[in-house]
Structures are given as C-alpha cells and as structure tokens.
Image (cartoon, rainbow, N blue to C red; front, side):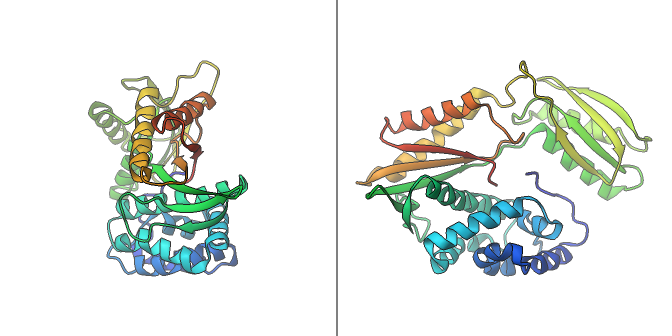
Length: 321
C-alpha cells in the first residue's frame, strides 16, 4: 500500500473528489467512522492525505478498510466508534500530512485488531481510553467468559530506498514534465532505512535521467546491493518489484526489526502493568514489500511474549496502514 505523493489536481480539488467518493454505498462504513474528521480535513490549508488519495482514486485498500470499519461499528456501536475516531484524529485533522497519515494508520490498526480478534472468539469490546492517557489499555473484551484488556500498537513502516526513488521522480516530473516523463520500475532486495549516501546516490541517479528517451534499463550500486531500474514512458511515477527466490536475502534487518518489536512490547507492558485482567497485545506492521517471512513473524510473536514473561496473548498483524 504505497501512498500517493502527487498533487494533481490541486489539494482542494482532491479533497472535493474524495468527499464525493465517500458518499458511495461501498464506502458507507468508512463514512460512518471518518465522515466528520474528513470534512474537517478538507478545510485544512493542505488537505492532501492518504485517505483522500485512496478515495479520489478508488484504491483497492478501501474495501478492506470499509470491512474493518463495519466490524468496528457493529462491535463498539456507532457512537463509541465516532468518539474513538475523534479522540485519535481530531487534533491532527488540519495538521501536516505526515502527522495525520500516521494517526490514521494507528487508528486503522486498532480497528483491524478488533476485526481479527472477533474472528478468534473475542466479544463485548469496549473502548477504555477516551483520552490519550498513559497507563490505560485501549479496549476491554471477553473471551470464554474471561475479561481481557487489549493494547494495540502500530509499528509504522520506515522509509526505504524505493521511497526515495518515488519521491524524487514525482518531484522532478512536477518541476519539468517534458524532461522526466518516466515510470520507474525499481527492483531492489532491501527495505532497510536508507543511509545518507544511499539517498544521495538515488537522487543523483534520478536527476541524471533528464531528457533521456525511454524505454531503457539501468542499474545503481548501493551499499547493500544493486538496484535494477526499468524506465518506461510515464508521468513521474515509480513502483517496486521483487523477485522472491529461495536464496533471496531478508528484506529487513532482523535485528533492527525485532528491536522495534521489543520496544513496542515494552511500551505496551508499561501501559498494562496495573491491569488485573488477562492481557492481549496486538502489534500491526505494514512491511514495505507487502510480506514477511514466517520465521520472522514467529520471532516477533516470541519477542512480544518474552517481554511480558509469557503473561500475554500476542497477535501479529501486517499490511494494515
């Protein structure tokens, strides 16, 4: 689920188109939960955001989001769902895009957690945190007649080398469409946070494409490996491909990833330490490549349980942003 960066048409036109799309019956549950917040977002100086882009362009992610919203409203009630959305997003509704997108991703993770836990038998969900209180779990629920306290954490995706390609070709196309009318297909095996040297090399490479005639193929040596780039005629866009074979390297640094999981689990444990009830931790992660190896998922769950010394029901979700 890659976020759109382009501002064609204007932000205000984008917001208007998105709000029109929000009235579609296919987006009814999204409208129920986010309607008031998105109307407020539309009045921001720069309203562009992931959700407006999805609505305006009919992104495939809307179907999954609408399903999660529908379960959330059904299980918590419409009033609680809207109040929780306002608690999480209202203060950022007119703020910078990055902050609003991050808050949206965090809240969607909560709705996704409710949806997935329902499938596992949890019932009677109730929001516990009505403000940004430290030391309070997100929800309570009942499983087999036993009360549980639920904490949901969203481990936001780090920037990747692909993101630098994406941002740079969009920026240059905006400045000079005739000279950068390309689509970049980027094949690169790693999703770690780019170093300063890598970012500099990618920006220089994309700039060097100026005025060339597509199609053509290029390679770029980076610290971890070689990026292979197919360049075709386009409108300043980029997309990522990856050939997964048995000896492909792990896209993410295992140590870096599991350290982030441990940090989130320790944060959750601090918030739940006074709860007398069974504890449930749901951690969501949106992998840049759209997948994680099963052994890495197993290690993430084991890390969460180790932090809680086994006194936790741990669930790992991915690909909800």
